[in-house]
Image (cartoon, rainbow, N blue to C red; front, side, top):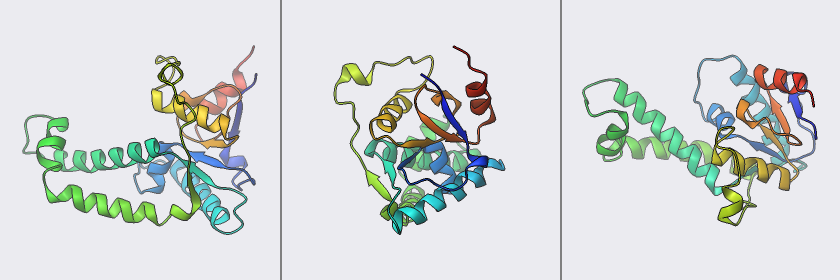
Amino acid sequence: MAYQVIDLANHPKPKPINYFFDTNALLYVMGVSNGQPYETGYINFFNAVYTIATTSKTSRILTTSLQVSELFNRLLRIESAKAYAKGGYSKGENAYFKDVFRKGSAITTAFVQFQSDFLAYKDAFDVVPCPLTSIDDMLNFSPAATDINDHLYTVLVKDYKACIVTHDADLLTSDLPILTLNKKLIAAARNFTV
């Protein structure tokens, strides 16, 4: 077994395969920025795959209902955190989300905008079912190495013979094609010895 980590900087043109964009990469596409220069690389690659997926259809972007839920929950939490940071609420950020943001009009405004943005890309996506259908299989992973969503996504990518596009170093898994700009992930794959 070997690592299949590919530096996106060296391979910016999509191949005729299916891709799974990890939620962290989709957040960049949806306009969430940490001000890092690598974000543009993921956005440009997504746009290139989108073009192929909607024209020649030799590549598709795979997603699951779980991922769409994760994406929208994170987007709405980010918007809530921005409002919370303006001050005036003493019970904490999580309480603010539930007590103020969710009950106000800002959540609907944010959701409608994110919905509109995401639906603009819908023709490139295939919503696929999670390949794990038993609780035992879903929970058969090391929580010290990754979280449950990433575990499910890695199984999905392997089962669908796709390539995952991610900036998440936790996804270093053998025999999983990974396209990334994460230097730690690239170095870890290069320096691994059996």
